[in-house]
Amino acid sequence: MLKSVDLKKCQISTLVIPVCEDQKIHNIKSIISLIELGKEKQEFQGKKDEKIVLYNPPNIKAERVVFMGLGKLSQIDLEKLRIFAGNAVKYCVKAGLKEVLIAAPLAKALPLETENRLTALFEGAFLGNHIFDKYKKEKKAPLKKIEVLAGAGTAKKYNKLSHQIEIICKGTVLAREWVSTPSNDKKPAVFANGIISLAKTAGLKTTLLDEKFLQVNKFGGILAVAAGSNARPRMVILEYKAGNAEKTVALVGKGVTFDSGGINLKSADGLTGMKMDMSGAATVAGAMIALAKLKPKINIIGVMPLVENMPSGKAIRPGDIIKTWAGQSVEIGNTDAEGRLILADALAYVIKEYKPQAVIDLATLTGACVVALGEKIAGVFGSDNNLTDLIIKSGKKTHERCWPMPMPDDYKELLKSDFADLCNMSSSRWGGAITAALFLADFVKNTPWAHIDIAGPAYIKKSDAYCEPGGTGFGVRLLCDLIQKMQGI
Ligand code: BES
Ligand code: ZN
Ligand code: ZN
Image 1 (cartoon, helix red, strand yellow):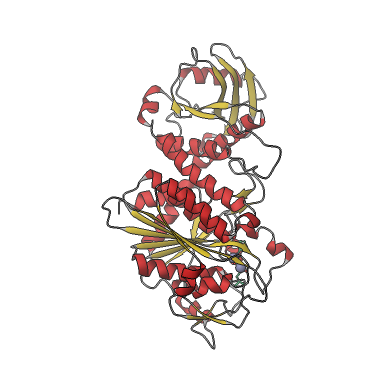
Image 2 (cartoon, protein in one colour):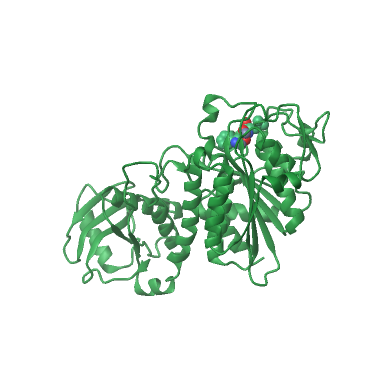
């Protein structure tokens, strides 16, 4: 919650103050004098990562005040505020505290819009408070109360903001937890039911397509990937209807609950972490549930094809030819290029059945995209520059960074098959993220479409300021921002 209090009168357990090394970034008098007191100690000057704690300081009724250095003014941006707030919350959790009050740096010296500053602080704090310890005996207690301190006018003007941010961050947390859940506890049927029950509670219309439906309706891509596993496939469709809005956006997420590679079995190294191959689906589900509560003025369809990719006597083989839902035949060049097969069916189906004005898919599609952009930046491909530009803008704002990638026409050659309409693997070793996107494009045709390859940023092995090791929920905040932008277009 955003709060305005008289620090002299109100009893506070923990107050955390971000401090700049070379400028005043606060505009509340009592905070400014507290910082002067803090800076009297020579070990604290507000340099980056410096921290001191004062207990029961004079003139205010706070049990403890934690000062955290942000460094020089010129280095402070919104992401630094998220990181600060995440670290502040983690400090309090580690100390076994129950609540925190974070002083918002709202002075004009900092060239950032007030709403964005507050949003960043809430995001860092809410996300930094997430702990996934369902599988551990020893639990850490997250904070029960997170508040941000601002002047009375600001607190009144932005009184609804923290609730909105909390809804979005809860979507991110949902996605994180699904991704971090081990594959033995999220087989397609279980994952599908989990999504549907939360989506129903959020007020979304839900449809569960079971194996029978997929067979009768010839979802050849999904069935081919699922063939090797004992766990049977599902497809989940979530619908959000906005009163009388005319436009519809479709979100499609890759949901491979475990990617062993299939008969083209991955290496030991390649196998680790492949429980995260359903991150696209988790992001779409998390975003849909958040959006159902945010109620934008645009219709949204979420589609999640869910399968497990396993080797067995029933699995598809290299050289097999399958028929996709859309009708194109595909030669299996490599059973590890499975994501594009399930997305091909899901994309073609949602376009034909729902006729959306735009489609966006998110997928942990290629290792090649991680080679190109590293582990923190997603690749964006698309047929429509307006759409990809909007995605990149939302990525900048939320710090879920996206970088534009090309889709050169002449690379389509690389997907030719001697026997089928297409091959699921490129004939070249290089440019794998691009050829994967070009494969998908064949199933999208003329609908404005963007593909976000999140193979890098969907998962982290080491904790950072506002995310523990595991699923990051990458894309939920981005999609919520994007959809809110798109309702005006
Ligand atoms: N799920 C993987 C991509 C992936 C790799 C995600 C690393 C996250 C981290 C995907 O299904 C895959 O295996 N892609 C292959 C494609 C190749 C066989 C054409 C790849 O990237 O190597
Ligand atoms: Zn694969
Ligand atoms: Zn995969």
